[in-house]
Amino acid sequence: MTQASPPFSVLPGKAAGPVLATSEPLSFWGGVSPDDGRIIDVHHPLHGECLTGTVLVMPSSRGSCSGSGVLLDLVLTGRAPVALVFREDEDVLTLGALVANEMFGRLLPVVRLPADLFAAVSGAAQVTITQDAIEADGLTIPLAPPPMADLELTDADRGMLEGAEEPAAQQAMRIICAVAVQQGASHLLDVTRAHIDGCIYASPANLVFAQKVAALGAQVRIPTTMNAISVDLANWAAQGVPAEFGAPAARLAEAYVAMGCRPTFTCSPYLLAAAPVAGELIAWSESNAVIFANSVLGARTPKHADFLDLCMAITGRAPAAGVYLDDNRRPGRIIDVALPDRIDDAFWPLVGYVAGQLSPDRIPLLRGLAAARPSPDDLKALCAAFGTTSAAPMLHIEGVTPEAELSQADDADYAVINQSALQEAWAHLHAGPEQVDLVAIGSPHASLGECRAFADALAGRSRHPDVAVIITAGRDVIAAAGEDGTLARLQDAGVRVLQDLCWCTISEPVFPPSARTVMTNSGKYAHYGPGLSGRSVRLGSFADCAEAATTGRTRARESVHA
View 1 (cartoon, helix red, strand yellow):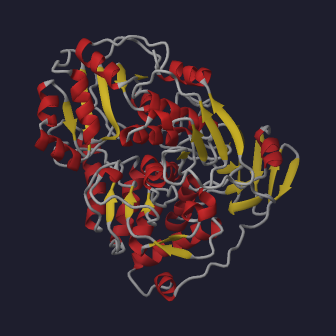
View 2: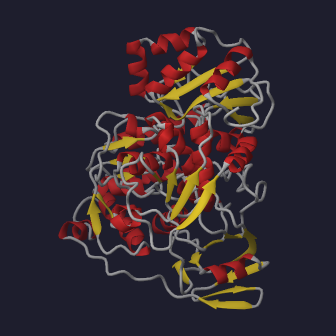
View 3: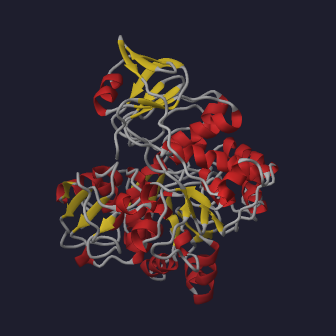
């Protein structure tokens, strides 16, 4: 990623506070509690620390596009950091700060520093930020104003910006133009479809934002799908979800539907009919969906933050930046993977997770995987896990993905995923008690192939009476599973198949309150689950999950290929 030089204010302002510094990026969604501002990602070095009132100094963010909503909620409730200091380009949290200022008049300064000055500020105890300088333990760093881009607008763009259409289009275009200037875009692009991630009730701020935009008369102008939401829209009350959570979560979904979004309610929109095609410019949020669309389908979309997704759906326009542009899709890190002699489906989320750790800030090219002939479901699992540990919007796999032959970036470097790296990550994600209370499939939403694979792994056996087994999937997949008999096979085995919500949004009592240890086939949920649920979460294959479902226990595998 491009480093800032000279230091500059992305969003100018004044702030002062103690430094909370980390060398490891953090996803605010799934990593920070909006209730108290504490870091809940158990895998992060700052786990347990409170961000409130601090100057947060970290290289960039990572993970979920929903981090913008969590930050906005923290700002509106007074639990946010007083300022953000980054070393790399960062869009998700910056967008949350931009919306807080643009729509709610709450200023949160954002500063970008080159590597040497970033290191100096990281080691400071206190930081004071003014409009033109940052002071850290006696060191004064002059700050340049935000870089100005000569943004070329069409007559239609200018009309929206100047209020020729409904107020919602004007507000949306103001936000898009501000983002475009920050990203150094010279113009805006037409996008053909959007996918909304902000419909997740990550915090009350998501509902406040949606209702405010809807009240301005917003209607989307391009086909727009919706991510998984936080409740089963039709059944949440019958499922015992408290009204204080279920009602606003439902209102949030309904607000987006009222603005013209399709109630697809899936975090795997690439599984829907008429998926994007190679070269198509789309405007998607939801990290796993973005990475799959770019990497596997060859479509083009940056990892757009929540709230920007709706702005682009309203206008049909997006900044001409990031991986919309040819040069920015080139690999910047080459990672050679030592393929184990024996692998099963648990290998793919694991290798994606490690690849993200090794390439947190640039697009990698993975070499050595083609011989294993990964299926679309394998790639789905790999992309989701990669998006958990990396901020990059895509990856390439030599001999597998459509743009793997792109020339390397001029500063590309090399890394290796060997057996030791896989073993270390496996020990990290596979740890926990052998007794299992809950089996969780479908993060991201399960495909029809994955539903069949799990039914096959059960092999006609029924779940253990002390184990809950739940699959989350999109409505279209559930309907197809009903037509071909897969749904009946799963239900006969005691498996619940839930629509609309997914594991990253599920809450009690749909999440069984008595469960203490969770088995999952998802690298994404193995990472986020402990912080989101407060439970031990263990990664495994479909066979591991089936064994846990039917016996209440799972064997401790020493490695992914054991």
